[in-house]
Amino acid sequence: MKKIYYNPFRKLRVLLTAGCLLLTTLVMAQNQPITLSMPASPLSKIFAELQQQSGLSFVYNAGEIARIPNRPVQVVNVPLSRALDYVLRGTNLTYEFSDRHVVIVRVQPRAAATPPFAPRSAN
Image (cartoon, rainbow, N blue to C red; front, side):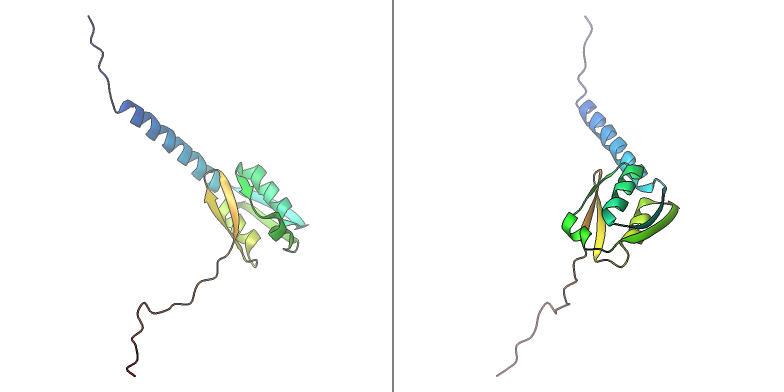
């Protein structure tokens, strides 16, 4: 009779391999060259084109994007992050990559630096 050996690390190997493949796909999508040549266009239209070329979904607040004036875009064979830097320059918006999404968010103002401990005055 043939003995069957159970390998407890088999599931772990499968999960790690799948995770690596997903991570590789995400990195490749971020580094895929983007080419855009659009006259003055709303950001929503620009994001739709970037979504089509990169294969990533764009998530943003439509009301906030609508307040940004139309802008021309001219980029040739640049990574997605560089195209987004160019498109969002001069706005108070930035982006974050999250799984297969590009999330457009407002830039958070930095808080003024305060000392961790302020000595009391002797009165």
